[in-house]
Amino acid sequence: MVGIKRTIAGNLGASFLGRLITALRPILLVPLMIHTWGLEIYGEWLILAAIPTYIMLSPDLGLAGAVTNRMAYLTTQGNEQEAIFLYRSSFVVLFVAAGTFVGLGTLIAWFMNWSWFGITSLKPTVSITIVSCLLVQIFIAQQGSLLSGIYRSARQNPRLGLFQSASHFFNLAVSLTVLWFNGSPSSYAIALAFAYAFGFLVLFIDSRRIMPNFTLARQGVSFIYVRPYIVQGLGFAGMPLVNALQNESVLIVVGAILGPTSVGLFQTARTLSNGVKSLVSMLASAIMVELPALLGEDRKEIVEHILVRNTQIGVILAMCSIVVVVFSGNIIYHLWLGHQVLYHPVLVLLLFVSVLPFVAGQSFSILLMASNQIHLAILPFIAVGIISIGCVGLGGGVVGVSGVALGIIVWEVGISTVAAIIVSKTNLKMRGYFLKCLRMKSLYEDLLYIRSKIFR
Image 1: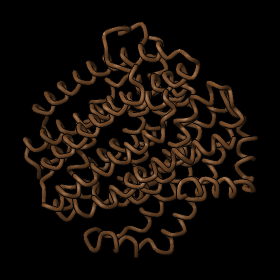
Image 2: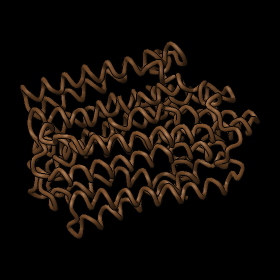
Image 3: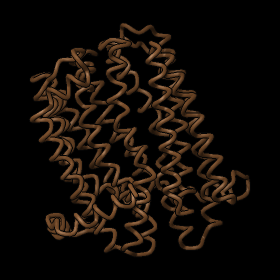
Image 4: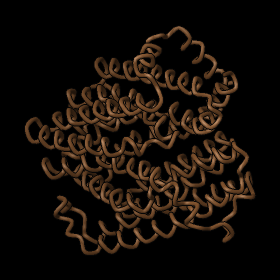
């Protein structure tokens, strides 16, 4: 157990800067975007950024998630050659499929009537440029996610975390530079596309160094290696759709009902709660990369133990953030944005309350993903997402942006409930799990150990 703690602490330490940057990125960028572009154009940017996510859902096929888990599992079992063939075959399938959708998405953007989405301030050529560059960013991210399987196979997850942290920092530096010099939305999108491409190239070169056998050669390339993971991959393919329903669909619905300015207001408030969610996800990500190997070694008790810790720590962070918002939310908001955006206390509080059910659902979801069982939950997740979008639309139409936040709470509660039910049928006994979460005695010792390894 000490070895697992050390490994997770190493993963946390390596990815700490990257996760911190991910949490701080929108907090730093949103004020600059609003100052440089104005709240209305910022809202139109958010709507445009939502569209490529839907276009690029299908080409991934979920293979990257299922395959990277399987690569780590096969290498642990001593079947490195099969893992290499699986990597090569998956790379070819994903590259061809995703590249095709980038082309189709760009073509669609040329014939789109952007006023249907409430986009009237940005010129059509600017909208096309933004969408095309964001399509390329998602394409690069999908290809890069497959490279993580090499690091998992080599048990070099901390090294991957360091490179990802450096990439996050570089992307943030590029973003801040463009906005600092009053860059337009189109120049911002173009600069980020080049930054993503550079990060992918660095990661690709380094992955070859740690495991030289994982090369992109013709030998072993066959759809036969990929086919067994299509069904499992559908679960991973469905997760971007689930996330899109929660994020991008909400923005599109809010834009259609309340307009781009309300989109900017809502997303600005959600930036703070999403920052807390990102910090909560930090430990979950460090755990996630180790779970496939632990499950391959049949160490289920350790898996349950670290998932309990993940839930306990997440709940503590969520409760602390709610207390801070209640007593200091207005001060934080004005220090952050000045007088650019009106503080909406009910909206902000409701969004922070949504972090609590998010914490519970996250532990169950990462277990389902690590065990390649996420496909069992996708259809119920999508159903919850559609119901939640209906609640968002109804709440927004009746109450305004606060009603939208109520729809987000419905979403998080529904997802966590579905995930818990499915996990209880496949992995954990829910009653025993929640009882263990209530026992906080040894949590403090684990936190001290992790802190000592991160900040030594």
